[in-house]
Length: 106
Image (cartoon, rainbow, N blue to C red; front, side):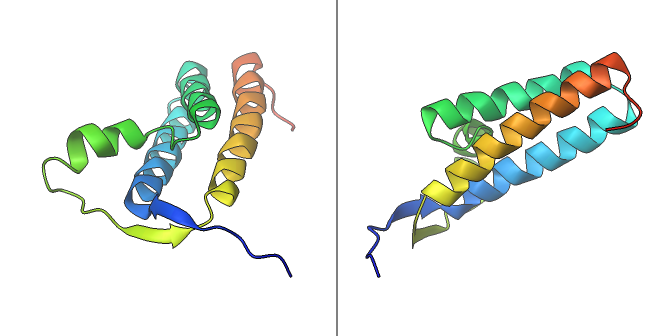
């Protein structure tokens, strides 16, 4: 069994990221806004490249400084979170294209 080196991961930033991804995708679906879905995918892709939560900037610049969310820093392995964001980017990109072209069966 290999030992993993754990790092400090702020789970509040991850939760903020998840909340914005889910909320904006629901909104894009309900309002049929392929550009919004594509924008969410772009933010996820950017976050993946930078190895940070895509919507983490909202947490760091608005929610955390105003005390609306408190840090929840835990010793964790960040790679699964990064992988899920990359995989989400891939599926969101495909879904955005399907939404844009009006695909009904996927």
